Image (cartoon, rainbow, N blue to C red; front, side, top):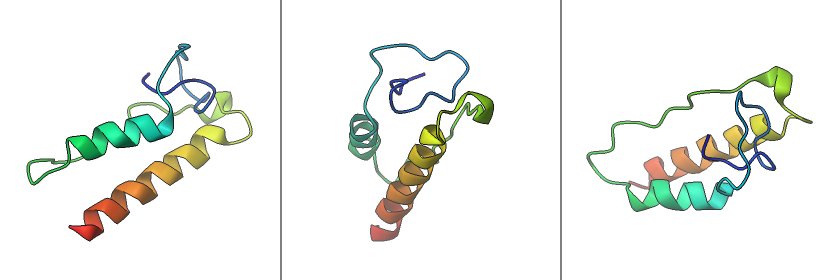
Length: 72
Protein backbone atom coordinates (compact mmCIF):
# COMPACT_ATOMS: atom_id res chain seq x y z
CA UNK A 1 0.00 0.00 0.00
CA UNK A 2 1.40 3.33 -1.02
CA UNK A 3 -0.25 5.54 1.59
CA UNK A 4 1.16 5.81 5.08
CA UNK A 5 -1.10 4.15 7.68
CA UNK A 6 -1.25 7.44 9.58
CA UNK A 7 -3.44 8.69 6.72
CA UNK A 8 -5.05 5.44 5.55
CA UNK A 9 -5.27 2.76 8.25
CA UNK A 10 -8.14 0.90 6.55
CA UNK A 11 -6.04 -1.48 4.45
CA UNK A 12 -5.05 -5.14 4.73
CA UNK A 13 -1.28 -4.69 5.07
CA UNK A 14 -0.52 -1.22 6.46
CA UNK A 15 3.20 -0.52 6.09
CA UNK A 16 5.05 2.35 7.79
CA UNK A 17 6.82 5.12 5.91
CA UNK A 18 4.28 5.34 3.10
CA UNK A 19 3.48 8.45 1.13
CA UNK A 20 1.37 11.37 2.29
CA UNK A 21 -1.84 12.05 0.34
CA UNK A 22 -0.45 15.19 -1.31
CA UNK A 23 2.58 13.21 -2.52
CA UNK A 24 0.31 10.61 -4.11
CA UNK A 25 -1.76 13.35 -5.73
CA UNK A 26 1.43 14.98 -7.03
CA UNK A 27 2.52 11.70 -8.63
CA UNK A 28 -0.88 11.23 -10.24
CA UNK A 29 -0.87 14.78 -11.60
CA UNK A 30 2.70 14.36 -12.87
CA UNK A 31 1.54 11.48 -15.05
CA UNK A 32 -1.70 13.19 -16.08
CA UNK A 33 -2.35 13.32 -19.80
CA UNK A 34 -4.50 12.20 -22.69
CA UNK A 35 -3.31 8.62 -22.38
CA UNK A 36 -4.36 8.22 -18.74
CA UNK A 37 -7.17 5.67 -18.85
CA UNK A 38 -8.15 5.53 -15.19
CA UNK A 39 -7.22 5.26 -11.56
CA UNK A 40 -8.26 2.42 -9.27
CA UNK A 41 -8.35 1.76 -5.56
CA UNK A 42 -7.26 -1.80 -4.98
CA UNK A 43 -8.13 -2.17 -1.32
CA UNK A 44 -10.25 -0.59 1.38
CA UNK A 45 -11.25 -2.44 4.54
CA UNK A 46 -13.82 -0.44 6.53
CA UNK A 47 -13.42 -2.77 9.52
CA UNK A 48 -9.80 -1.60 9.92
CA UNK A 49 -10.50 2.06 9.27
CA UNK A 50 -9.99 4.27 12.33
CA UNK A 51 -12.55 7.07 12.62
CA UNK A 52 -13.23 6.87 8.87
CA UNK A 53 -9.82 8.37 8.05
CA UNK A 54 -9.30 6.17 4.99
CA UNK A 55 -12.84 6.74 3.76
CA UNK A 56 -12.47 10.53 4.06
CA UNK A 57 -9.10 10.38 2.30
CA UNK A 58 -10.54 8.36 -0.57
CA UNK A 59 -13.34 10.91 -0.94
CA UNK A 60 -10.79 13.73 -0.98
CA UNK A 61 -8.66 11.98 -3.62
CA UNK A 62 -11.66 11.24 -5.85
CA UNK A 63 -12.79 14.85 -5.56
CA UNK A 64 -9.35 16.17 -6.55
CA UNK A 65 -9.11 13.77 -9.49
CA UNK A 66 -12.58 14.70 -10.75
CA UNK A 67 -11.72 18.40 -10.50
CA UNK A 68 -8.50 17.83 -12.43
CA UNK A 69 -10.42 15.86 -15.10
CA UNK A 70 -13.07 18.60 -15.37
CA UNK A 71 -10.36 21.24 -15.89
CA UNK A 72 -9.27 19.40 -19.02
